[in-house]
Amino acid sequence: MTRGPLPKKAIDEALPVAQARGMVILCKPGAGSVCDFAIAGTTQTPLVRVKRSRRIHCPLPEIESQFAEPLALLRLVPATRERCRELWVCGQYGALRFFRVGDAGLAEIDRDGRPLAGT
Image (cartoon, rainbow, N blue to C red; front, side, top):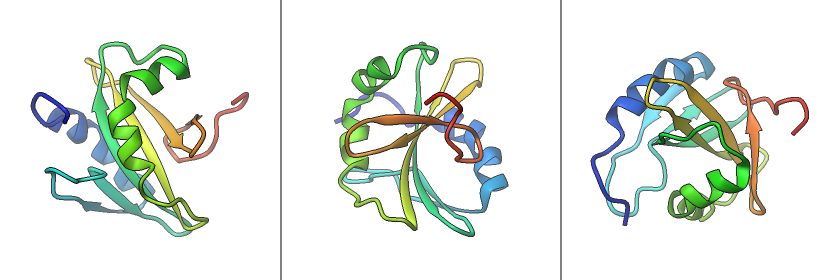
């Protein structure tokens, strides 16, 4: 079980980015909740989990380690061509970093959901 308060500030930072991608559907937080919100886009519906971190500029394996539990919960949802899973990490000063959650690992994406060059 994740400890500490819900990442309300991080979600507040993430919502404008999410709204730029499509209609945002907020999910009820609690036990068994897989994501914080879904984005109903034109081609894909990402299920997004937002987490806070003091170290957002670290290698992908460290991100995987930091957020092993929320990533495991996201991976319970089957990914399809129309549905994907994303982890958004918010730094203490509001900077966001975005990741597509695959079955075998993470891939860094930009704020619009496109893969970053070189990943």
